[in-house]
Length: 162
Image (cartoon, rainbow, N blue to C red):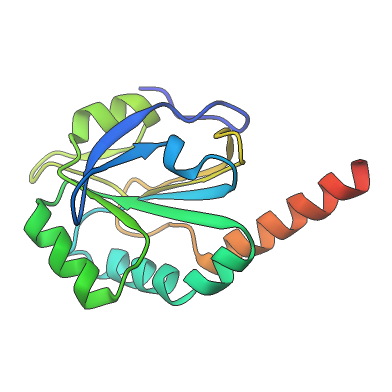
């Protein structure tokens, strides 16, 4: 299993989207900085806290030009309830194949029950990995303020280099 390194292109993933359609990564985030949140499932209190934090920070993230997509192995109905409960407006994917996603991005997988461990990526506007956070258990994940600070830093340094 390979872990994605900074500068590598995020691999293409297609996952069912809550509300219909498909989450297409990294295409859905193209042209802006993006955050991909792979969460353990709606039963995880740490995942709920992370998703709530990103939902509450969504206006600030949009103002900074940062899009967010989350996904898990949860079925559509479970994911839909989570989106409603946490007031999530960004795209949420459901029914992810744990093994296929793990193979593509290097996420850790829990064996029984089978789900993806928390994994987060910040992508540049071209879909390359800026930073990756891999967790092998319940804790260790991206937070909105960290993402906002990182993107601000990258934008400031890109302007200074130009």
